[in-house]
Image (cartoon, rainbow, N blue to C red):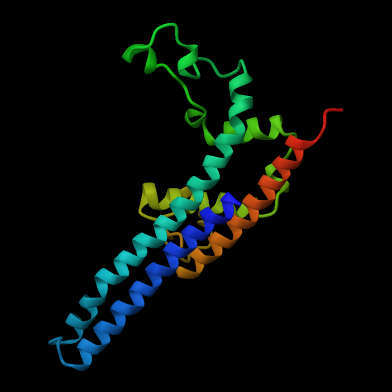
Length: 207
């Protein structure tokens, strides 16, 4: 199953990133015992780059998971978007009378439609509610976290914060090793249930 391979690839990437960190930390510990670092500050500084690389890898896991969900959504929204008169403009090269830089620039793809609209297309086309599929809320939360790292260095959007608590001035989304592992599992659960449901509706004979 393609989805299993795709998710296993992301899991393998994460496993290697974690393994690389442990290997580098072991090397740093050995160097520390040999007295390579002049003081504790140098010892801590040696850990900075390995940790930074792992942080990048963890964010990449989040990005890949969200991209995977969006790619499947675009795939299954394509027919409903293509057939709908709501979305104007040429939708492929075949819709163009002439092909040149000007006409090509006017082509609109399903991936140009907002995420919310793509969801509406899928729910209408397949008579389903994504909110009823287990794991959907987790996928939405992951997408918010990824967007926070993409656009706000991980800080939550002000409207997502309960300012009445007053415990933190402007909290960041947590996405460390456990969160990344959890995100892979929850995304897998959602996508398998989503694809199974779609497959059943595609194969269902017309009434």
